[in-house]
Length: 249
Image 1 (cartoon, helix red, strand yellow):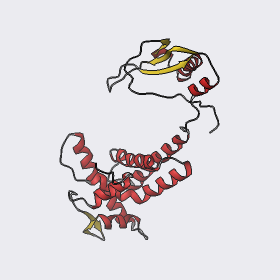
Image 2 (cartoon, one colour; image 1 turned 180 degrees about the vertical axis):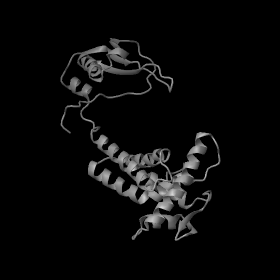
Image 3 (cartoon, helix red, strand yellow; image 1 turned 135 degrees about the vertical axis):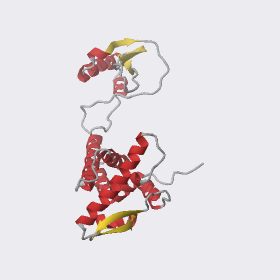
Image 4 (tube, one colour; image 1 turned 120 degrees about the horizontal axis):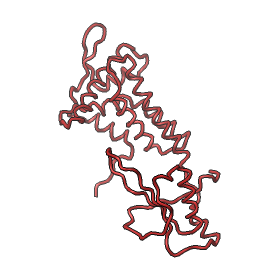
């Protein structure tokens, strides 16, 4: 059985980029001091992060790297196999800042660092589709977009800490139960952009069935739900535990 070598997306990208043989071009042609010079990836990252930073060289590195990465995003959109490998290379160039954000967001807000890293990478990739290589601050734009997404995710994760299982509390308090499950079925409207399927919440007590009705009201789903009712069981594809949102964390 193969073992997972890394559990960090940053580590995976670092290995893929630094050991890449498919990177085209392997060096960036950048204008510096009125002439064109070719610098490899380690030199490019040093130009971005080592002090003192040459502003003109830094802008040129970002411009060339983003232009190459956007070639790959376009190739992927049209199903072409003609890729340069520079999307991952741009993430690697940005990694010193991304690593700092991941460390700060995960330690201050206690979010899972691996999830924060994934959000940061997603932020870079999504912003690549919108940014212009000729923007003098294209590098800063990518970094800010990634940091914003990473911090937003970490803040949201704070609100998702689970509390007690409501069903377990009801059972412990001796509430009267019923043999058949109560269910709340939410059927989303048809969408041309993707699949939609009913979402079914199951309850094992009358008290919890009432909570499901309140949940529907809070979510504003009156127009797209069927009332809580007893209904035959189908094939279960997953489960969701309802937890108290009002309890202190």
